[in-house]
Length: 346
Image (cartoon, rainbow, N blue to C red; front, side, top):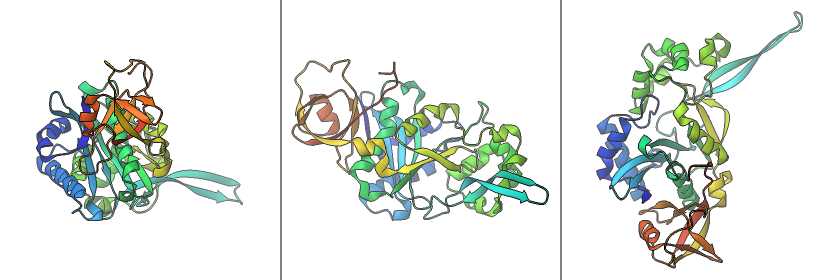
């Protein structure tokens, strides 16, 4: 059984192993033991209610319960930019015009922005490549949305997701090579690492505050503005199916897009509903039955699984195994939402 749950202190070594597999670009999951341990501790204090608003963040893990192994992580930051400035580039337009010369030209620009300050963020999504099949990716990504639906009071009105930008198999980022490297004089991997470990003051110190002309960048850099890493394309498709949209903001390092939406307009938040559970005595689920994500809505002992329950009037029939995985007894409420799986993945 694959189960989403809150991170625990004992998950550190498994998460370290996952971090080793991410490659460049996932700044919030660096291969740094002390940073990851601090991240876990911050998450634990958030669930315990002792973290200040500016540092609140929820880290979830996907556990293979048979192997007792963490095989994926995902997270929510409650409010970004309250401790340190939250930087993006806003893709804008500057118009140059002269009536006397009959010239009118709209020029695309990049402006350093803090516009997302205080908003909630979906972040730190990574699934072990060996588990990228079936419902695992949907479970890892959308469990956070069910959590936001159940505990709406802990989050801002608007949510963002800053997606990993394009880089090649050698970790070369065309956007960084043509822009950031000129101001920081360090390679992409180093800048990426510093940002991921919390050393972000250099961004404000070294990045220019005036607008940058996109046309001055090399064609290969312009081509990747708002483009995601090939491994991130499935995640982008899922987020866009949930209603998040690119609104012209990009990551300052790799040019990856920022998707955003009002939380209450996100499909999983909007369409999830509560059911009373009942014990199913069937031998097994119908292979053709639709998949659901099921969450127990227990804040300190949160659990989410993917299953094929049977709706029956006002009840949701689920197996004893699913009840146990959710730490629920029959007759309790469960939050459920249908999963939209790409063809051939179930």
